[in-house]
Length: 480
Image (spheres, rainbow, N blue to C red):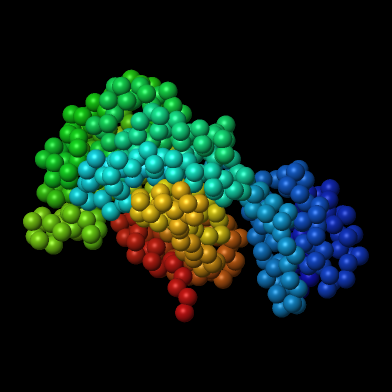
């Protein structure tokens, strides 16, 4: 197909039948050398967002944006530079983000304070609670400073993570929520999550939380074995964990998630089964279960290196994971992501948005943000963070994400989910070269039953889940 015919086809793809005849007429009136300029001007000066919404169905938005990018590439050899895109390209990006109701814009609020540090944790946290008041003021100031980062998109999920966000008092939460409401709006918020320690979730505290906009609680239980909890330096015991869930229920929360860790020192099949049965008996809507990792720099890593504890063997790890999948499946939970299970329809919107590569804003020390084109992250120091915000000079690093990086991240996040990698979107976003590469690298795993094509999505099978890291590595593209 000639380039000019290909572009004509791309243009038609964007339009409904009633527009096609006038589009054909306009094409014949324009010299071929001016077609790119014309095409861009039509996008920028006529197809504004309100018009696009009337002319293009939302489901075609991704195809339309991919077509626009392809046109850029096709005309590179002609030396025609794209026009500035204040309306056209930005409108398409906005439409692309609105193309699916499951694509919320997310905000992450990092609360770094902990009473004590767990020996396995490598997230940024601090025990310097005397800085809490200054920090909340700085956090709210950062939210104000970065109000343009999400380009005016409504925030649909807010996630308070840590650290231990349940160390905050009611007045702290109210100050943060008022700032979000003022600069971002909360009328579109559908999910607002608080990470919490079980021992913080008293009857009084959960009653207070119910008066705030929170509608989801994520609780770090890790295990119901008291001796192991003590080893991990957790502040709660099994009885407090159970009571915390009941307190949340009585306060009116009907969306509760708990975290579990398996492969802990001394783990046995019986102990892991007891943890799972106890979790199921609580009737929570969501369970996250992660295998323990020994991160360098943590206290548990030091204990391992000193041979004071021992890592579970690979055979046991595989068995624990099999038990996890079978037990929760039999209890009615959906295994929608390698480490995550939920009751039907109770997918967490915030985490799902991250796995789908949707823009998000992260505020607080070490918090990451992503706007679709680049990623940035704040400095990992509470004192330096506060000082820089107070002096109107936020300290952060950033990284522009090229096509290869975005492809690799799409593979890494999508393949972990039950839906898998959407092959049509992969081709639209990253062109045929990377789509073909993905298919070529997937073929051996398709042949041996570790991957399958399901509804035009490349998905892990149960056999493939056990070697998912290796499959991900094979599918990722490494530039020479």
